[in-house]
Image (cartoon, rainbow, N blue to C red; front, side):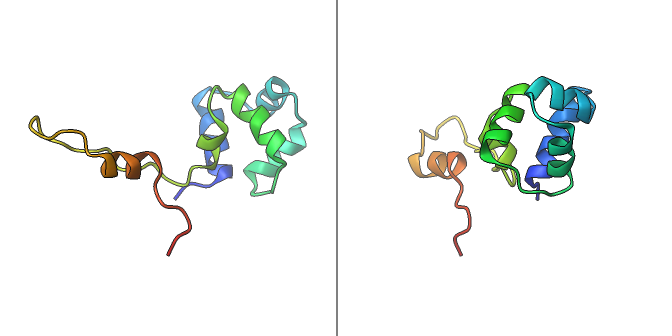
Amino acid sequence: MSSLRDNVRHHRRRLGWSQHQLATSAGVSLGAVRSIEQGGNPKVETIYLLARALSTTTSSLFATESPEPLRTTAGDGPKLSELRQALMPPVGLR
């Protein structure tokens, strides 16, 4: 399961950036990037700035896992419940 720190690190490494490069591009301190990648609790505004710098969405940085892709056959029509589940998986409900 991915966490905010894992997702930030993943996107940063995908671009081949150092923590310093991400901090500069996002307009935040190097300490803020380090803190997030070590499991700190940043402000939402900071996460937004990082997402913009990383060319991704804020919600993708919070994502805990990717939903399984829908598998349908040629004869299957769209199934609203499956589509809804794929787009909005239940989070925190037990």
